[in-house]
Image (tube, rainbow, N blue to C red; front, side, top):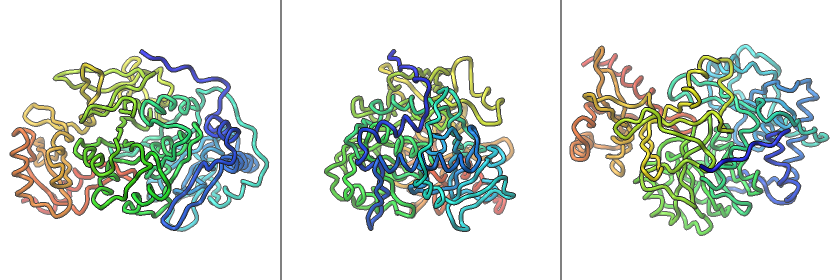
Length: 497
């Protein structure tokens, strides 16, 4: 097994991300916030100056090392400046989606206990009620660029650096605390998944508060001296193809749902694009085939989670077999627990430097995720003889039909190219659950049932169908099966027949 060297000490995450590249490549473009009308460009030298100026400004406000800064900031330069500036000064940023409601952000603030909130201007960005601390604007953060640079707060790589909230699609959103060493662990992804080098221009289609975007879209490119391209707030999915072409993107990263939307329309030729990266939810094999056919480039999937980023992936150097997510990245220690019928639960060893410190304020929930030295991910997978891992679904999303364990992804794959379908178990009467199919768009239920009978074993076939305006997804475009179950329960209560 390959090993990954230990994180150096003393250490600071923000210093690791930006300092070396700013020293070597001060005039190179580090960040472009792109839109159809043009782009906002920031060099490495300017980005570092803004980050360290932000650190100075936050400390001058009286914040102390370890204080938490709640971020209510959308896609824009202020986001990475604040995130890295806080860490540079020894503070703990907590990014959140600007789409959260007042009730949601109030609960999260109660978990985090912020000493400062930074928010985009405008009444549409909800704040905790009551306010637990002072609030400043993103514009005020950007104005700190003119301040003298703060010293890098170097220290133990195991200390808390930042926190992120889980998506909440499998239950209540949890605050995941990550150490400074988390960025060191991401070095295993640079070639184990991303195929990333200094000459790349990586465009990520996600919101900056998502750990996938934050890591793959921003911090990884800057760590190696590449250029990060981020669509401005409000850029529609339909424009991404033209942005990839116009700004000479060499790598594209997104959730599979975004890829699906892009492929509904024509894409321009993309001569500079080398490959695409997907994560956040499983990539159906048929969708990957469609991407390759229409772009002429490969797409590499990764399995990961807020608690440990990615650890299983395909890569340009070692593509995954069709239908599989990939292989454990070199340096990772992963295993499959409770393997039965060829499937088991994916687990990561507690020694992995990318693994979280724990859930903030919930030691019991943290302890519950471990079995001995193994962090249990909750992902059900199959592992082939050559080590390739195929994702089957979440443990809490697996369905039981007549005693058979059924993966929702296995059922949904039968409808690829026919309709957008999601399946989950619903309770039709007390103690009785069946597989239900939900479909969006102008699909024909009779045709879906016929496809089900032709492509799926009897126990895998949905027993009922329900049309929806759109499949419910989180702010990070993850399918929300709990919302489907709630939708069924709501409709069943209105119409018991």
